[in-house]
Image 1 (cartoon, rainbow, N blue to C red):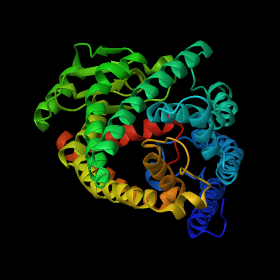
Image 2 (spheres, one colour):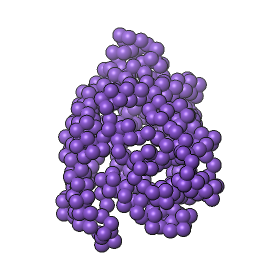
Image 3 (spheres, rainbow, N blue to C red):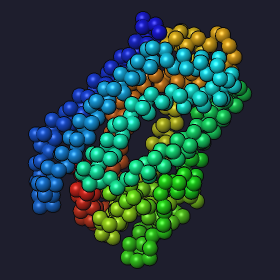
Image 4 (spheres, rainbow, N blue to C red):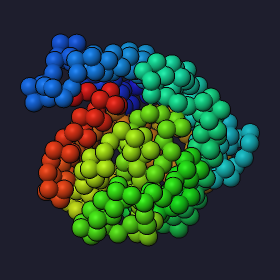
Length: 398
């Protein structure tokens, strides 16, 4: 690895900056929680109990203290793997000792390269799920279910990655000078297909989805959907309580697979009028075209990043900087994939700035959705009480 290369310097600067900024922001949040976390805002006096805020602070502090060593070790592991030349060594080992088929090289590389991160993350994930979440009364997960989830998630991810790699390999071979454009189109199309099949085939592998029972709640929600002109394949209840007592509601799917999903924990915690207001908020995102606007904004970003990867894949200096040498052996389309991989490495640390921009617009979208819910439901009172309850039940910071 050439530490004097501008590409390596950009990578190291981004990684260090991201680490320092992440820790600074989390520390500021921690200090603010210590100083003000148990102070009830004037607007919420009488609605929130002091003991609830105290417990919320303990929960958030426990997560923060777990995050600190995990973040340090994850950053160090990333630096060690990249700076030691591990990734090209792994590619070269697979190519020279196992197979020269570029598709199989990429699949095996994806599996083997993820192992160090999985090993590092495992104790933190287990502690979070079976100690921290159970301590605060959230987790209902069994170890057997956790293992089954991990196995199913692995095979689903491998199947989707294999499909994506196969499509990309064909594009790399067919469009040598314009693959960046066609992969952008393929990626967006692939994401759309996933959104269609997710509620039909993927989500049911992990949870049971039952049609919402007849009654006041269903009647309220169907009227609200009709009022908003939102056509869906139905209202479903998800058995979220078999893993956690956290509650939520969401839209999923696209076209005919579009549906509304309510956690069974949400139904247990809120009144029908409050759930109606929560759905009104989610419908606000639909009516205000927030998802479509976000997608339209992301398309040029995706295309630009792919073009940058295309340019990088044609620059020997980039590969040399990180110790990648494809001059010997039969590599097929692996160098093109390596260009995408190195793009993520070089500029990955600067993603925190994209996150800040995204959070700014997300916050605006949330306010718009709240205003829509107030208008469509005729009052903002039910939304206010539902949000207070959800914050209390989920121990979220106010």
